[in-house]
Image 1 (cartoon, rainbow, N blue to C red):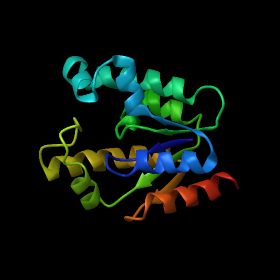
Image 2: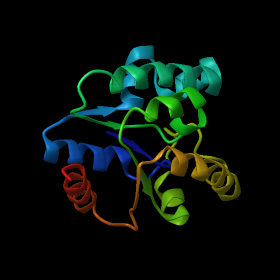
Image 3: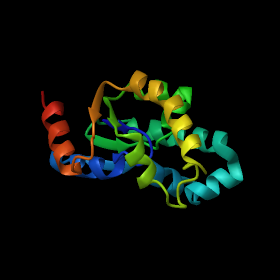
Image 4: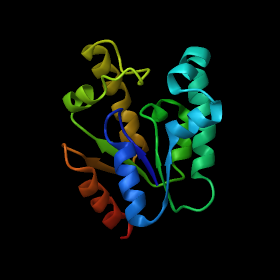
Length: 162
């Protein structure tokens, strides 16, 4: 199972809670990319650019989705922008965590986010560009609406068992 959504939507937090509930393995894709490269995400962007990062992210995604299906993969916010990664997501149950743009913007002001955008306008433009890609890749959309991660994880666990 893969969780997708814009930065700040709660993919990692919900993913951890969901994996705990299902007793599945949790994979934070950004963490795995960073471990594979031996660099932080901002360092990868600085040395390899976004295209280099997306290629590496794709390789790590394919590895994370391979094998047994008892895992929850929290994808990076831009995973859907790379066509080979979108194609790989077709092989997994993919859930889009959709959240209000204002909430997302306020959650993502930290320097550790290389594509957080300098302005709200740029942030919203990038979100609008990705939104159709999230919807295309998703098997299920869950509207977060500020709900607690455990509540969303409970909902997804029930859904995954049906």
